[in-house]
Amino acid sequence: MNAPLPGHIAAQNRRARHEYFIVSEIEAGIMLVGTEIKSLRAGKGNINEAFAGPMQDALYLFNAYIPEYQSKMPFPHETRRPRKLLLHRREMVRLMASVAKDGMTLVPLDIHFGQRGIAKVQLGLAKGKKLHDKREAIKERDWNRDKARLLRDKG
Image (cartoon, rainbow, N blue to C red; front, side):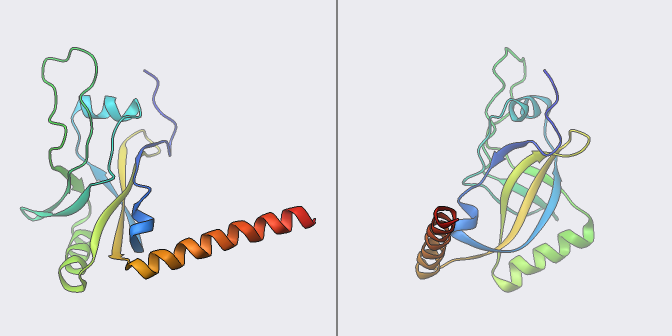
């Protein structure tokens, strides 16, 4: 199987930007087993319901679904197991403090492959949106689309 191009997105959480205000983004490595990497390279995986949080003095990715690889592997992986995130200690402490003190959430935005073909997770430090914020964002998006359409038709 060919290695995916750098920046190839294996799984994406499209609802994250609708449900949350993304305050900052950070890229983290993720510890995966061989069959998980093969599934991600095949474009399978779902992080729509996933979140990151502390466990045993480290950050883990919870509830990310990476299906079993389709070939007859003797030791298949668990599909929704917690996966350890690889960050520098200082970054991890800062993120854990923000989650604990400011009431923020760590949301995975996507899983992609870096320059060397290594799987990375783009995490967003997020604050939840209220219903009226979501409506406002939808109105603004619709207005920008209509404005672009009008400008395109005029010129």
